[in-house]
Length: 99
Image (cartoon, rainbow, N blue to C red; front, side, top):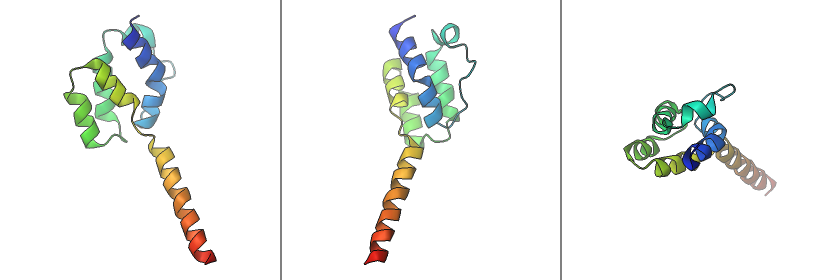
């Protein structure tokens, strides 16, 4: 299996989590991935509920599979960002109330 396919398989669970798609339990990774990475990336991007439009277009417009995979891997974890914002907001409100 080539390096790109291995990298894709390694990062697939976190990609699906960040894009709010289903788990990959039982997904026949290795036989299906090699040669189909572009199609799988397209499907994830088109169906990902947490991927903003600009990022979707950037990924879909690129013809470089390595670049597309890197963009998909680097998707922000929205749940983590939302929790950080919520924590900071609570902290700010608590501080204001104490004053």
